[in-house]
Image (tube, rainbow, N blue to C red; front, side, top):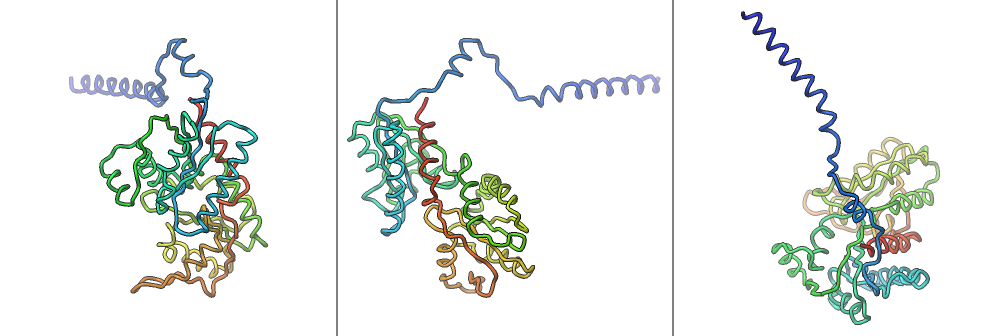
Length: 325
């Protein structure tokens, strides 16, 4: 009887295993809800502009000083020049999320409303969709109602937009091929003997978004690897706070290995050259390691993404896509 029970149990287990094997592939398939032809037609309808007079607003982070104002003004003017030809938007403007209270997001909306816009496409002029975009920008636009996020925005002096205009939010600069094209252009302009050089791409990011930043930079790294460098590397160091612990060790190791480091920086307003020069002026605090690269073998690229020739066209194209509903 025991043998009979074991045989039945074995048969049951085998049947259950076979059932699971047959079921798992089905479960692994993405769920696709059944739609009527009418529903499918509505879902797949051709997208159309969401207004007759759509405004385009570029929202920059903001920084004190004329250099920042001149750069962002130049970007807006270049995007506006494209619009003068293609004429998708009724008006093009730009504003800052922080620092410049006379040209904040509320002021940007006010100017577009005054020009008669009936909808607004916002392009967040940030490299990656990290905390500034996921929380700060959407809170200031009035699209995210978390009390703490509102309190944080107000603590920075930010006003919350109050408008009846429909708002569409476009992607950051990490969409499409913009970052890849920028890194390739800077690497090609800077490298000399790539077989004896290692490319190091640095960018703004923080620990909370490490995986996201790495993922969104990977296409650029993969493309740069085809240029013949001995190695392609990356590091994000916020606005320089972790330069001494995340960037400098890589340059030190490369120098020790007899390889020159070609540094390319993915920042809106800073080139690798200006960024590294500024960081090395920071005094070391207490027992913190020095950010100085003195004596190490490296060279910095000199372009910044805010002046990259393909940036205005990218901004315009993502705005056009966002303008449709």
